[in-house]
Image (tube, rainbow, N blue to C red; front, side, top):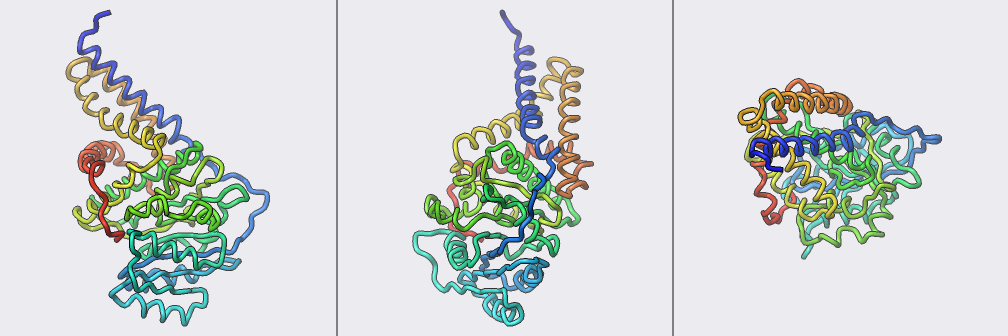
Length: 372
């Protein structure tokens, strides 16, 4: 059977659209229609909150008191690892420790040899932790509520050793803020949905919990000590599975940090983050790549088919995808409190095509040496 090139173009468009629909139905709808499982017994476990900071005196002074005043009925401690700071972080922690007995500052005065990035201070913090449940966040993060610890630890059971939380960004005026929050939402949509599908692949260090025994049983970060990043996503990628990972998306469990205010600082941040993706497990790289490639090809093929094949068929297919996408985005954005982005999601989805171009070079870029 001989096919004209216009027909081949249309078939390619259908295949790419089918791939997109597969992800929306097979993965993302799991989060869209997710309901927290009922627990027969809810317990409050002792928790060690770990925060690593380097030259974060201002953020520690602003955000740490709120974490130290969490309303948690059980025992918790906050371990703040001051990683070779040159600012007043040491004095801020000393002052707060006089007021809050649950704060335990740890002072690092030397860089770790052969261990790059945040991994060494975080490993020290984990070793110092008194409790089995570890809850991680950053110095620039605020807890969404006084019940953050309670909500995150509630995801643990006898089988669940990892709890993935949502690390959101504060809503502020401006286009860049919306783009950053949309990218953060898409990332969460994927890692939450994959976890619900039984193939978890990452978490974010702004809001992540796991058991201390899991960390030491898997020899901590030893598999990727040579990389400055990966203390959150690469570690979870290696140790998480369909049985030991849970998600918590209660709005009171979120953390919030301020988004970058300039395009260059945001690009540098994302470039640093994406250099670790090449070290994910093969199945995760494959699934993430197929989604990204199909998304990237969708709009060029949509335009090409509208011009060269049939604009009616092209618009009909686009409309069906948009409808399904709208259902998923409406429900998931509502759950993650990003509903203000829903009304412009078709434009943000087109922006995502440009986003792929902007960060394509990170696939080949060598990771930097700094975790900040």
